[in-house]
Amino acid sequence: MKKILNVFVICLLLQSFQCEKPIVEKSRNDYSNELRNNKQVILDYIASFPCDETTGCNFIAFGSKPCGGPWEYLIYSNAVDEAYLTEMVNTYNQLENSYNSEFEIFSDCAIVNPPEQVGCINGICTIIN
Image (cartoon, rainbow, N blue to C red; front, side):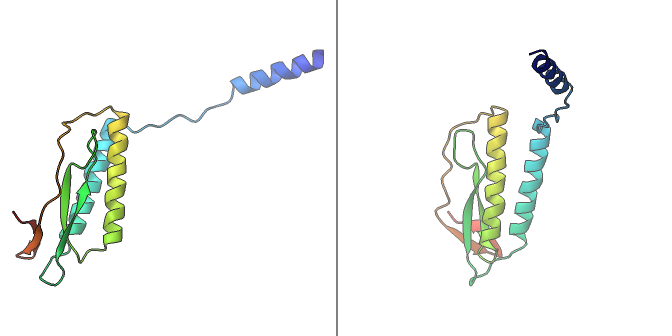
């Protein structure tokens, strides 16, 4: 019985000296910087593909409002790699959703409607009213 108690005490002592890995959480500033940088990469990618009559234009929901739904819609040329663009935008949206949850961000709950019509004007995809 004494041996068992000694082993238990030794195990308890050894466990108390274990080093735990510090939990590294992103700061609000880290999230903001990452979101800003990712958004710029996406906008630069979209801007690198001009449109014309043959390629046409499309749009994608962008951002994650705390109440749900996107902040805006990005207009892009169909010449982009849509799978790649969708992956980048989904990653951005998930990151912003995490940011909203982590820091209890709030916003208006206004619904942002998708554009009714987009088109190519002077080589740039644009919302047409």
